[in-house]
Image 1 (cartoon, rainbow, N blue to C red):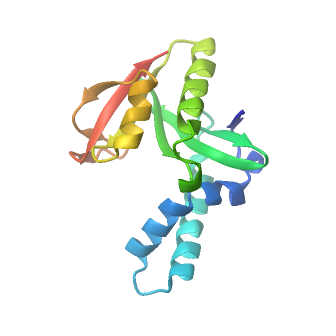
Image 2: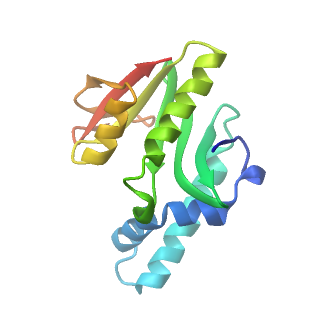
Length: 166
């Protein structure tokens, strides 16, 4: 079931951190290589919490969660970007992958947004992330650029920019 979360107080951070565990583990190894794995994870989760607090300072930003039985099965963030919204942070825990949760989540978000007004949705996807590329294509996203321009103005040639209009 889709849940839209527009404030930090409505977010269950423990469930969010569980959904992002693999990403946090990777960030922990990268950012804190001299620490034990458990401490790397904790430090990366603390960084995630700080980022989430900043994220909700924009009143137009929100998390979308596909949840069931008290678990976040797939999550993503949406925030203002250029002349539309940027879909980012799409994550499904490894044990839940291949079950269609990311597709259900993305399609549901697109459906909700299309009921409000016409909006462009952008997404930056790592060129090596075949699973995410497949989800985006299945949900109707088309390739816009063979590079990504992030909100801070930095450019990555390791990611595509895809777009869909609701």
